[in-house]
Image (cartoon, rainbow, N blue to C red):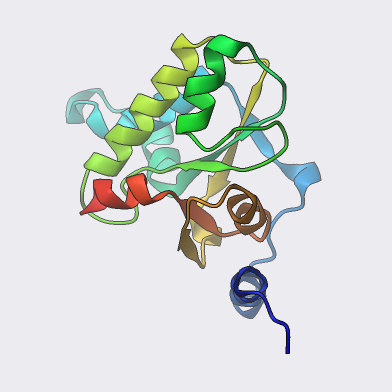
Length: 169
């Protein structure tokens, strides 16, 4: 049989999601956010205990962010998009993750750094941010393959780059 490894991963992610009866919300019910909301969400882990906003704290510990490129861009943004594996519009996806995966705060800080870089680059019209609930996560795939990353996110799983994996270790 001619079965691609990518197809097996996608089927596995979809099957895990269906098995737990947590039907992933369709793209028409997505919770979109601004870069400032993403920064606030990822910053919550670093806020002093006495200053915490509990609504954001709960959302922050229960959510992650999917970043997708939706528009062209200038040549000056090329390096940033290359680094984030968002080389072409409508291809690829990047997950900005809080520290829900492990007790290490390095991954959250790295995600926060990326969100701040995107804000500094002023690419709000070129990038969209979607907040997703951690309770829907049934699979995590580590890959630097742009097209596979996009398919993994569409299947409802979390995708991490190899660099993000290193932040956990």
